[in-house]
Length: 111
Length: 113
Image (cartoon, rainbow over the protein chains, first blue to last red):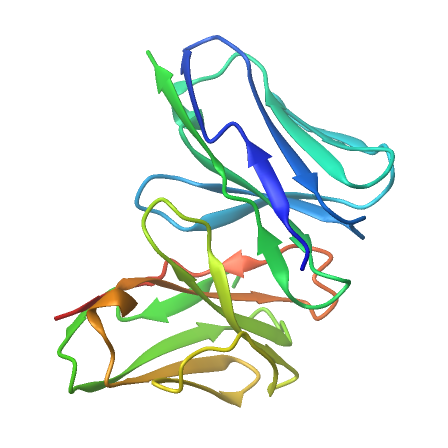
C-alpha cells in the first residue's frame, strides 16, 4: 500500500532559527495535507496542497508540493516557542477516503 | 460551530467492561472517522463513515464497534478490550471530498486496566 515517509523524526532548534520537514510518498498523490499537533493536543489542519508545484504561505510557514506530486515540504522561518509540536503530512490512499499520515516531525524550540 | 466534540475526555475501563465513546459535529460534514493514536506515533485510521454508512473498516478487531446514528453523531462501542488498546482515540470529520482537511476532536484518552 501507499507509504508516506517523513523526515526528520525530531528537530531541535534555537528560537529564531529556521525549520524544514520533508514528506515523500511512494505513489502520486491527488493532494497532500499538513497538520500540527501540540504536546497533549490533537491534530489541527494547517493546509491542503492540490496542484503540481504549488506553493502556499501562512505567515512564517511555507508549504510546497513537488512537481511530480510525490513530495512536499513545510518550512518555518524564524521559529518561535509557539511553533513547538509534531507536524504531520498526510495523503489520501489511492484517491480513497483513507488519509495516510506520515510519522511526523517533532519540533522543539529552545528559547 | 466549527468543532468536533468528543466525550469523555478520559476513560479508565476494565477488560470486562462495556463503554462507549461519543463524537458530535454540527458542521454539516458527511464523512466521519475514528482514529487511534499511540504515544509518539501518527494517527492510525480505524473506521470511515460516509453519508452515515460504514465505508472503511481497517481490519479493526470486533471488540471495537462503530455506530453512526445520524449525520452529526458517531459512537465507538468498546467491549472486552485489552491493555494494549490503551491509546488516544480521535474522532474527525470532513466534507466527503475532504478537500478542506479533517477537523479532529480533542480525543478520548483511554486506559484499559
